[in-house]
Amino acid sequence: MTLAPKPPRILSIAGSDSSGGAGIQADIKTITMLGGYAMTAITAITAQNTLGVQGVAGIAPDMVLAQIASCVEDIGVDTVKIGMLADEDVIRHVAAAMVLLRPPIVLDPVMIATSGAVLVGPDALAALRARLFPLATLITPNLPELEHLAGRPLDTVEAMIVAAQELAAASGAAVLAKGGHAEGETITDVLIVPGEAPLFYEHARIITRHTHGTGCTLSSAIATLLGRGESLPEAVRLAREFVLSAIEVAPGYGAGSGPLGHQAVRESE
Image 1 (cartoon, rainbow, N blue to C red):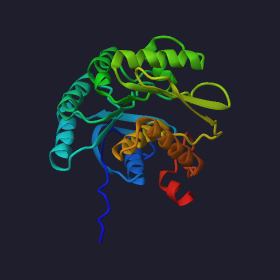
Image 2 (cartoon, rainbow, N blue to C red; image 1 turned 135 degrees about the horizontal axis):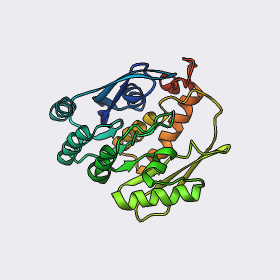
Image 3 (tube, rainbow, N blue to C red; image 1 turned 60 degrees about the horizontal axis):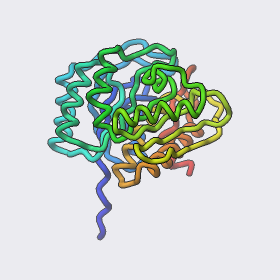
């Protein structure tokens, strides 16, 4: 009997979404559906649903670090996805752990709420730039996040490319600039790898309100696919296909921005 290969071990360091559509919960679903073994280090607990966030409680930095250490020391880690880190002290602790581990890291810089409110203060943003961005394999900002990092509006794809190139040059990481917040019927994402020509990924915009957790899902999908041995461009391509499929089979739950249909993707193929 031939044993099946072991699934890649993916550690998600992110916040919890009580309604299950984003954050750690979306990461677990995505990692599992794509054949990975999901582990978590929860950075914050939210009372949250499709209509918004009703409450947030941060996890103590020492406890975040303890969760990471527990996974690393026993199970092991192949790839890391990092999401919500709004506190400078948590960022410092996570960065210290990543320096020792040195895994491939997909960093989703969660810093702008759906309402447009800035979730990350100046000190935390400075810590992200200085401590975590240089450790990342890939940074995945959406357009508002990239604008916040660049400090200026990005009104065209060309402007988005320039800002992504600046971030890649400053951090040494690859950058996937996501254009879903831009106007138009076609969504363009751009992958910038330092020293290489930009790679473009395009798809027709899907008209739906059920897009809660798309950024979390994409970043954890890329992390899982990297853990499976895919190249970065191929991991991005396949992860985008997974997200689009999950949007198309969204269950329609909630009165606001509803969750994706992670568990239905395989069944619909």
